Image (cartoon, rainbow, N blue to C red; front, side, top):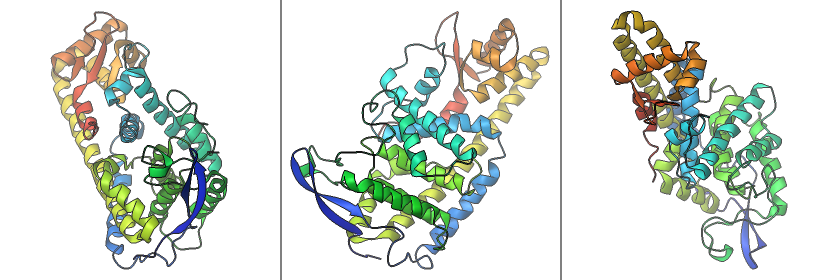
Length: 386
């Protein structure tokens, strides 16, 4: 349904130029979304896929899967913003023993992990999903590295723009800075509105567009906007664990993503955006379920290869568990994880290398670092640079 422009324009000054900045109308859309027409089937399929994802999250210990899955999302979400850092770079960076990892890009990805974990921890404490929490998350995201000078944790006080070399030829100019607090206040009220009958999944899709349209920060809006999807679903209890991340879907369908955001603003076609969003939820949830099953099979097959090793099998299985918890790890870290002695851990790791389960990365006799290649191969899918 094409409703026309879903907001109003206000003349603002940016970079010495006068531009037309867009102030979005409050949510929900008027007239209301047609949830009984073209959106009924995509919504049902997305909800079914989310239910399956929530149920299979018990197939692997949540902490084991989430450690790496959250980091894959950090790499993907940062990749969309032009950061060039791999999952292996991030896992190496997090090992105190590993040196020589490219710093600037991996710090940004590490910040994303910290911001996600901070937000989830606050929600688990009972803190409301609010503008205050969104600002906190942004503060963690931009706490180090590039962007740290762009007012971390504060709504912007100057005009920004998207695309183009200057405001005058920008693809889109978000709300003027003085309008940002009111716009974000309206978004916060909509997130918690319970009387309009909107399913939480639909509310989440609407809120994501509104946040990206407001663009309330000087930097980091895309990453915070994608995190908001996960936080809303976890806060509402739709997901028990933060296992749904749409960054890969948005990356693979980048042109459609930006086109549909633009069409919401210019012609009010919320249904087309919502159908795209719901398809993304379904596809992403189904992918996460398939990934969980592939990892479960990999772990079981590798255990079966280890078990015939008689007396050495016990220590090898414990080191294998350490690699499942951290698929890039050092002998020192594996010692901490397993409680085995350093010589026993090193010997078990060498046995796993001999079986082709682990691979030594550094070529050193001391401070050796190992990767669980089968695990990383599954997780790395989709993280290639565009």
